[in-house]
Image (tube, rainbow, N blue to C red; front, side, top):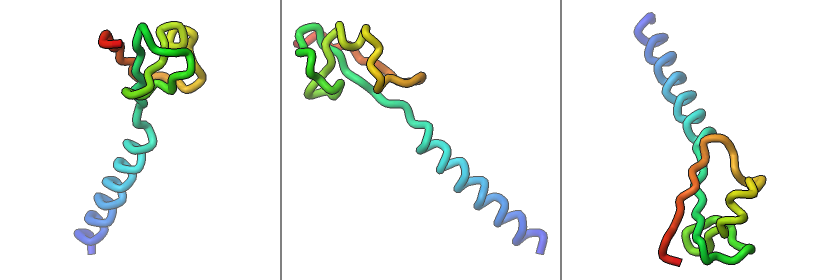
Length: 71
């Protein structure tokens, strides 16, 4: 009986950890010096440097901004 209870507790703890790790995933945004002002921050449609420095509403603590030099 105690072993079954321990297994259930461990299973719930693992499920809770997985649920929390998915909910707290940080976003990644891309910035390119030559990008237009209408970019969405994706690798194929990066933000302009001015947009990234203006702190868009999409940015949250823990997010990463990746600078690109190829555009």
